[in-house]
Image (tube, rainbow, N blue to C red; front, side, top):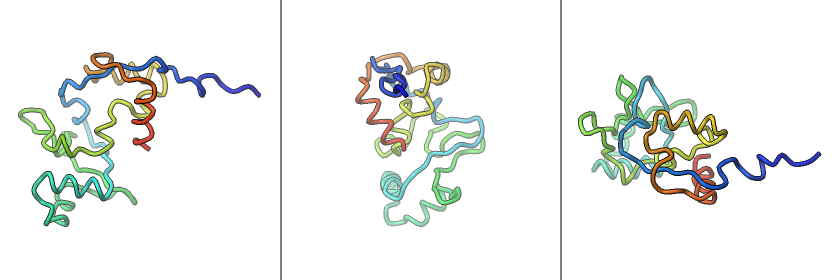
Length: 145
C-alpha cells in the first residue's frame, strides 16, 4: 500500500500566516470551554497574579478539575477568567498556558483547509502578518498534544 501524500506533506507545507490582533475572540465564549493547564503552568499563572505563596487559593479561584485534567475557569459568558472584560486583553499574557501560546496552530484548526478557514472566520489574525514555516507549525502542534 502506498503512503498517503497528505500524511507526508501537510496541506500547509508552504506555511500559514498569522498575527495576533489581540481581539480576544480566541479567549471568549459563547459557552464553557477548556484551557488545559498543567502544574507548572498553574504555578506560573499564580506567580503572574502575585499568588505564588497562595497556590491552593489560586487553584480554587481560577481552575477546575475535569476528570483527571485541570482547566482554567471562565466567566458565565464563556470568556476566559484572565480576559479583561473592558480592555479585552489577557491579564497574564506573558505567562499564558501552552494551549494559548500555540493558537491557531492546533491540530483541530490545521487538520484540513476547511478547518483553517473556519478558524479564520473567527480570528482576524489568521492569514495575516508573519508567515509561519512548516517546521514552526509542527513545533506548535507537538506542544499542543
